[in-house]
Length: 447
Image (cartoon, rainbow, N blue to C red; front, side, top):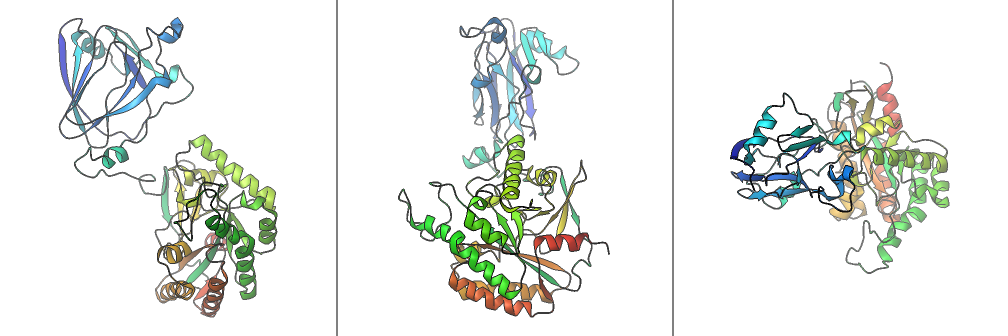
């Protein structure tokens, strides 16, 4: 339906990092059209008309309904006609630039051209509003790039920057640590004991993955064994060897009396590992993630008597904001990155907050070696020893975190093999065992 002469414009739309819906507009005297040309899809934010809704009062008929506003992907070469009164935003790129024919009336084009800058409008059959002037929340659409790539709607893979421009979180920059922090040691080995619980019925790591019945006893019992016996066995091993270690703990695990007792008597540094291992940070809003950190740290302080300063996110389930929020929450040592053999700082560019990263090695992790590569106890311990010995031969100071889970590393055979390998490594003059906090203090010590 057209009020006057149709006007066809072309536009090339480029990718934008901001997924917020800032503006919505509607036209009451025409049915607007969009046609995508070329090989790339586009995203359209559309809200159902409200002008004729009998369940709304006059004020709300002049506003979009966020509950009926959705984002739609339009494949390349397709078009869409939106009926009168449909709320809509300008088309959005799904990664690659998208070209579109935009069908308007001359009245609408002239009204838009009369605006010196983007702003609210109510003339020329264009009623446009700024969302933030009417709601105290921000409407956002999900990143469309994984969706269109998974469905094959783009001809080539789309580059998807992860974790900010440098890969260390939004607003975070890497800064190298000056040499000399090792105090004569070439390799500092940080055993990191993961103390975890899983939400009942939500699964978790399995020793016999084919067992899927509900309720499931064997794999759950295997995980529970770690906290009942494996934790105590690992604690005793480290005590006998005189080797320090860091535990990263789910706050819900610390609520178990036998876990809290074992941790308090271990002599380990007590770090944080989220609330439980079934709930990561991915898909959380900023407010939810800040509350998650506070809930975890408050819980661990209440159960164990000290507030942790070392953090490992459960299952590496992070957002781009996780490193920044960790720093704001008082975390000094961060274990989520796995990309080096040396410690380094990440610095929040706006606040200047500085957090030390100790790379959490995937090659020495018990999940990698035992559950993925199926190493037996001796092979597992030998792989760790070989890894550390090779680093000790190389120039410079290195750090290696040994990710250990109470239900994997804490079994009798693996503790026996580990105790022998650790005893040999302890005798190496180039190797020293440390907690994450001790490495942090060594790096921060003036020199």
